[in-house]
Image (cartoon, rainbow, N blue to C red; front, side):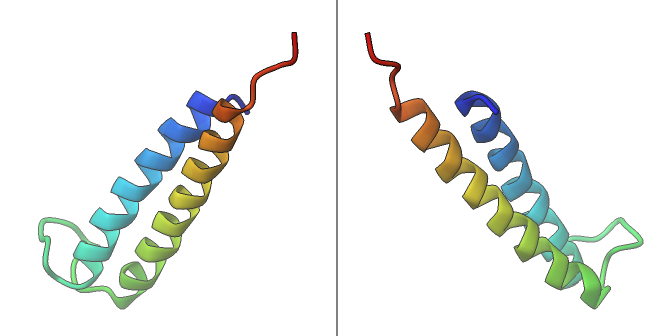
Length: 67
């Protein structure tokens, strides 16, 4: 996976995870997920996966091929 792709997917996962967390906690309404404890747990997990993807993307972008 290219570095920029991992960065973009990581950022998207963090945003989605934050929205899901807020919906699960009942702070963000307008969805069937609002107030559901499951999404208050799944959201942070998705956000942590996003952080991992960003770290991976930054490491890949930092590497330059020799030459």
